Length: 362
Image (cartoon, rainbow, N blue to C red; front, side, top):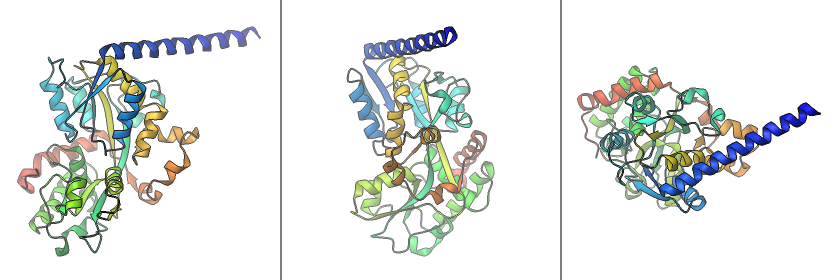
């Protein structure tokens, strides 16, 4: 009985310390009064509602949103450019593609912090020292304006067909946008390439053929360009396309297809800037994102959050959110490239785009 009481006392004491620690963090974050984010479009992964959830929980903290359409490389450049700046142009937190996490750590651009739910984040998508860690993933897909496209392309090779003249676009510059860089990895893998340098080279070859055929539109695609008919076919993460489809509400109708062959899964990671003007607000933001509430917010935006498996096992995910996801078959084919493979693909794509494809995406 004495041992049981001692254990209960210890657990109660531990809970109290954790509660006090969280209370102290909240107080320090509220004293800072601001959190500066970057590259978080509201229709990306349900971020609009996630941000609103954070603001509702912590109304004392102003959320200052920088450049929602920035790419991962732009985010790192914003940190580099604002190392001595404590003003509103210096980002506190980053959300970048997996390959950009190690790069940011190596450059000393981010600082370590482990959230309370750290143990439920899979080891293969987090830095062991807490510098960066996976937040969510999706799979590469095609979004198609079916008002303008009669036959929905089912594979990357289909995009070479004459019927898709001036129709296909990426969501950014493949020299800087993680989403565009990994679209080329998906293209390369569809031709049998292994993830890495080979997928980057094969992806560039296919994109050069699509461009030569007159089917590539060098415009940064988004829901508006799909709706306007400027980019009727777009390669992007499934969660972005599904959110765009919902926002368009059938005007025009849009179909989302996970292309045949290997289904490329892309993991994004969170990190705190090493020069964050509001470090406590940044840590509180991270705690919110990796809480049950934050994770479910991403899932509502069609993203698979980092704690997805652990939360499913614990019965924490409402069935209606699971039912809203696309068919499981597309995810059963998912391939998760390693950090090293993504870095090699990124180097091949960003370094070879100008010479192999030559289109200037704007």
